[in-house]
Image 1 (cartoon, rainbow, N blue to C red):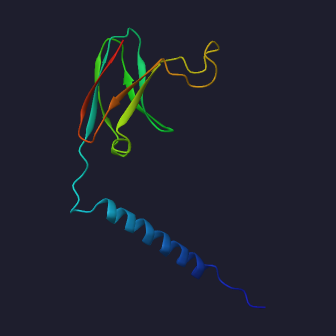
Image 2 (image 1 turned 90 degrees about the vertical axis):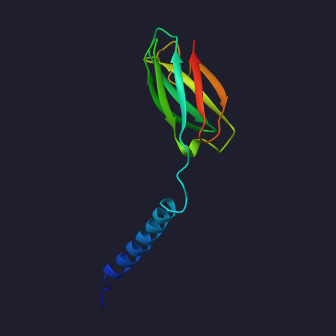
Length: 128
């Protein structure tokens, strides 16, 4: 009885995987295509508590970062979230509220605001 070696099959699978990854990387780093402009949001928090800031787009939720109480922070919005729709929603979560028994175990945001956004915009958001 003759046994077949799995090495040729594995080499073929690995080669096709590397070729597909290399093609995607080459398309993403096309020197003729300029990088997308940065879209930023300046957050002015008038709250006395620290909050986490999220950007929501459809079913996606991405944490941009922490905004300490009574401060201003700047964030860059990921390019793949800008331009897929003309409006972005920003959500605020007070630090330490996730899982609190009066809120429940699901993430609930204290507030949400919606802003019109295009690639390259400099947005301003004030939290009260």
